[in-house]
Length: 170
Image 1 (spheres, one colour):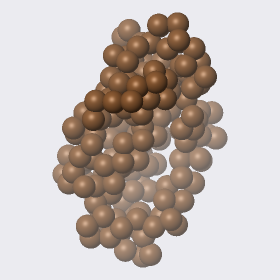
Image 2 (cartoon, rainbow, N blue to C red):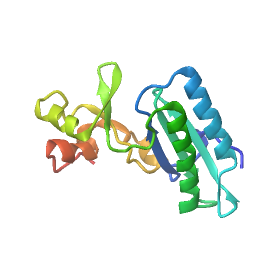
Image 3 (cartoon, rainbow, N blue to C red):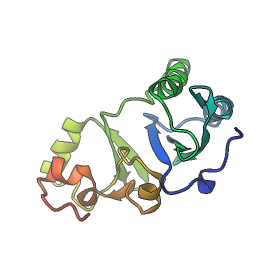
Image 4 (cartoon, one colour):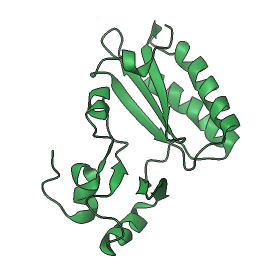
């Protein structure tokens, strides 16, 4: 199945967001995206081609989505994508699959800190419920398009986890 634009996929498409620990150089980005594109054009689940797309945002976020209406992803197909990304982690010397750190807007840039450090920053008032965070747990293109990925901390899981909020504005 040819790789399609992320914009061509429906809101119901399943989404994975992978965050590089740092912005990639143009050559590293080109190598990563070229290899990911080659993989996605042949990506299958139980031999059935997957209709999928990808996007690269803010020089560090890889978004991969699959329209499961025609064929759903399987554990094996997800493992194959993970293996491909692990190859790039080793090759580029970066983390792509580490979901532990918190990524947030810090002035004009994007900061990436361990959760314990984000908690300290929240306690010190350096980050607030209004701090824009990247909620990489978003699982559908519809949620991404609705603004639930790059959102104030109060509107994501970060709100309850780091600011003790009960109502996260959802």
